[in-house]
Length: 136
Image (cartoon, rainbow, N blue to C red; front, side, top):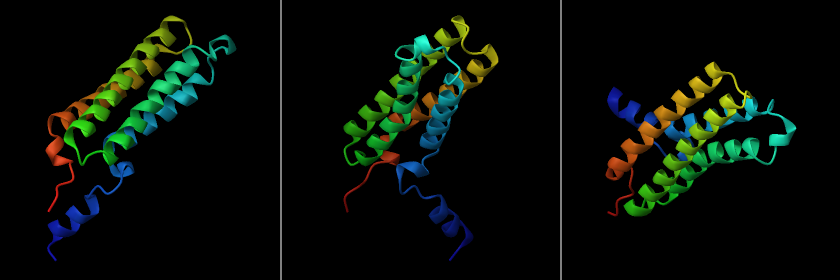
């Protein structure tokens, strides 16, 4: 077996958890969870809930889309939902800063992380054939 064959096998994506975009989205959601622990209690059912829900939805939609990749339109639709949730998360980050709940530097790093995630999602949406299950 050639070296490149071995490397390709190791980097093969089998589960949604193998996808770099999923891993980044999951990490960013966990970072938001940690950061939002300090939000005031009066925001529990508002900003705190919304930013956590939206950030978690990014990874969840990638996971769901991965299992729907047999049909390109379904796959792209879930990735598009994920992209929307990432953008919504960025909006909630802006609110958190403006309300004084989150330091600008922390929010900036998270915002950039979501910019990168969105870029990865757009790339996957533009090239669904690279990810789809093909019938043989």
